Image 1 (cartoon, rainbow, N blue to C red):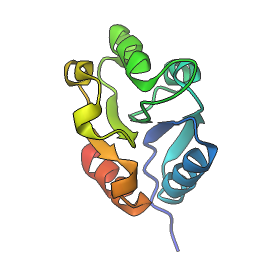
Image 2: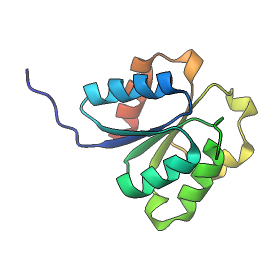
Image 3: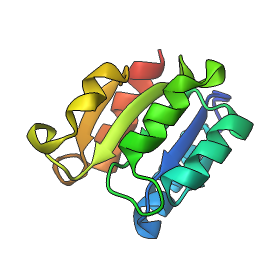
Image 4: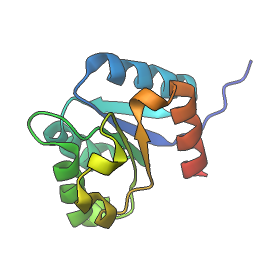
Length: 127
């Protein structure tokens, strides 16, 4: 069985280790190059060094939340065009208003989507 080599890079930024591990496993299995970070501060460093094609970003995290991290990423030349999928349990209605100005590719509520559905959304956004 040949593995489809995608060579696309995905960064998962979430403070919950089981969530990080689940999505890291899912995307590696799908042929992606995956890194993860446990908070926005670490996520920022990893983004700069790893240069991902897509960031799966949680909003509620210690150190630096997802919205703050995304603001920082968007201010950098290297971070202007990275696709970002918000992956959180905060309903879209409660999400920070600033998100609409930060060029996000999508918004997914974790509790309402299976990992396979999230994988399919990412595949679609990276086409």
